[in-house]
Length: 520
Image 1 (cartoon, rainbow, N blue to C red):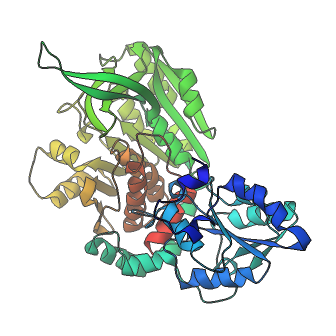
Image 2 (image 1 turned 120 degrees about the vertical axis):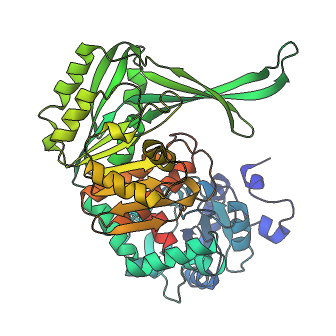
């Protein structure tokens, strides 16, 4: 079966089927069709859902040449928020192919149109009028124009009525619950897209230090075979392994997507440090300050996962959770002393595995200009590790169960706990992340804000809280209003849960487009 046939459903009408081509096949067809000076016009986009503005755009573009080719952004590169695209790439291609003015349709293989232009070599590449009227935050248009000129073509713009597909979806085909859509409409009226994105731009020059343990997240995919015949034990067949840079490694990668100056201070194990893997996974912008713990491996959290349903079966830790060697403790404190004042924000992710001793915490609390702290409860420290170990923090961000564990209050008023914690730690900001409920934020000046969860499909919850704090810590350090910071953090969290483990970091361009489409 050809690649083009994979794009076509069995019930696709024959007249549409003839128009839908694989990119390579289409590139081979076009030279002959150009005979006699016939010009090829190309349009590119998501086109989800197809609407009258798109149709007018195609009709005008067709008049600029003799053949109209439309390339469609594939599903995996549609960054427009939860439950998008509404229609799959196959259905979007079929809908466009049904238009009389369109001669051929192909699904792109890349995130942008640049490579498509290089392959198809259009005489005219056509954009909608809206791209002349607004800021191109993706930076794609100059690259597209350069690519078109390189193949001997030109860029042109249509002039007709325009609609925002995201606005139409948000208004008429809502993919989020009604209360979330109503919140987004209110947020847009209070702050606006430009204000939210300006806050993201404001953190670019910040100097940020990330402190905490390096963790390797290893996913071992298995296939369930059944119960052992001799014991009540689940038997599985090993399929494959995937490794991710987790812990503060993932955090530093997130921050590096938004801030130009990022340093990382963490512990690797003297035994099995896995340094080559770690260096290969870190963003090149991150300044690495590795310390090595004696008689310990770099922490590995190995999760065994039933591959078909993505059910996590159990975990195995490779870790030395004994008390820190005094020499290692002093080396950490020495690396912190006199260094913290040079950073606009120090972000501490304390996973409770022994790196951050009382002595190190004391240095952080005394010397950091702006200290953001997250303490996490997990299987290795549950009940022994809470935020109360820190005498001071400017920004505290913890999960609801960790807040309740610290307060020893399972069902009490969460707002009272947040206000009490802010008072005890002198924290100007406290945020409680609440999973599918969203988050609750408190600031002495702003009071309380609640922002709903913005996630669509949840693939894997690992790392969602890390992504939230990675973005909100520099935002709050830069003076971003609490509600705006929480909103952006929830968008980052929505992106984190949509991917397996730490396969990808939160990227500024993707986050920006997600925010734009949510607020249209």
